Image 1: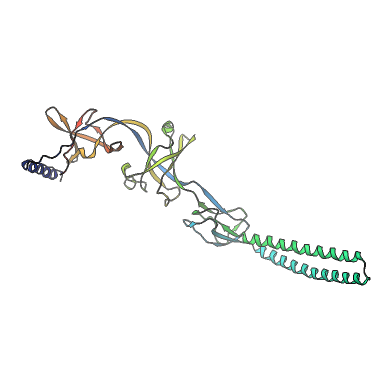
Image 2: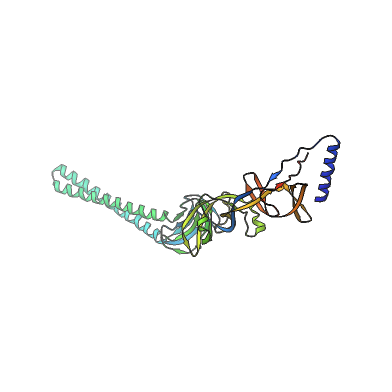
Length: 342
């Protein structure tokens, strides 16, 4: 296929020359050694900036579970319901107490009215009226206290609804229906923050890792075929490098867009710069492949000379994407670029 393409191009150039049209010649590419970051491929683990627990506010048994792992929840959404059977009994007792006190209020009011009437007729003394008034005030205050106690019981019953403290994705729900839980026990874990990648690199690279350094993130998948090459990777940056080395590893966090649907703790391939190296690279169009061997034409005294080269990986340079040449070229060589297509 490559030979047929080359023959067709030669035939087209000959026709143009016969017609008196000379194709524009592309300027030669001068090979120069350039310094590029040495990218190391490591696996990054997806984590969330915030993982918050939804906790039970009262003790009791799980009556409802309204979410499951992987669900998206909003802040304040009910994720489960805890029921304490004793609260219903306490509420009944509070209501009965209020009814009894209301009866005492009616009796105290009657006594106060009678004492005031007798005082008006001159039969009773002012002391008796004051005593009846005090008794009436005491019972009224007891009713207010009983109603406040009832409100406390009702609030505790409402706190059986376990609310999501923040919006995010449910990671785990470590309880089942009927489980007995205590106040403060974790009912669900929610990934509420933005996702990022956490890297663990060997200690020898600690001095080379810099914050805000550009990195590349492969597609989902652990195999090289699934992750794709560095040229197809997503851009990202090193957001933070932790100052502590643990077990011979340095930890760094990488921010990248487009991983919001990843699993927490999912791993993906990341290329991170750990050093600088000098390379020789040429534009991709300067390389011709025949029978599995790559060739580059360079300018010589007696015309163009075609030499075999061994290629490396694609490199992003100031002149665009180029291909690294491992062997076959040296600094200062003039690469003959192919003529542009008409």
